[in-house]
Amino acid sequence: MGWFIGIGAVVLIILVWYISTLNSLNHAVVKIDEAKSGIDVALTKRFDSLTKLLDVTKGFAEHEARVISESVKFRKGMSVPQMTEAASQMSDAFTRINALAEAYPQLTSAPVFGNLQREIVDVEEHLQAARRLYNSNVSSYNMMIVTFPTSIVANGRGMTKREFFEAEAAKRSDVKMQF
Image (cartoon, rainbow, N blue to C red; front, side, top):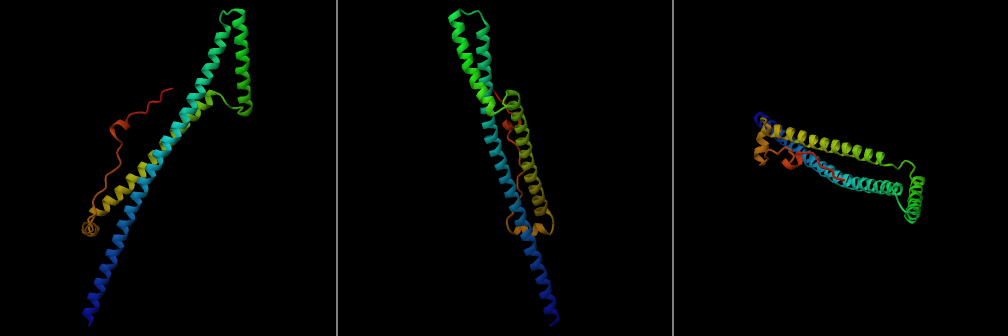
């Protein structure tokens, strides 16, 4: 009778260990999937934010360049009718600029470009953090499945090493932003 209790206790301990180990491995897999999703979120944010902010920055830069160009034309040697027309156009342009400035008093190109630079840094830091979290979770999982005795459970369940996140060769170079 004592042997049956002893064998039952050993079987129970092995069963509890097996279930606990399997739960730990499954937990690690979920953490990897969650971290991978974080990379997708960061990539989406990067694309959406930078595309929209770049478009706004380009538009504002083009607007300022047009205003400056118009004011340069005004100063060049023009006939009186041309000067009158240019003065009218400049007046219209300045009215639009003043309306814009009243609505957005801080609106100038330097802050717009500054915002673009800050957003680029923020988005890239967020993406790097997501990649580091993913690789950290993959590292923990990979170590678990090759370490004895956890490797017994992992091999029995067909669990294999996960690949670390590595940027594609084309994406390792710096992003070119053209205005």
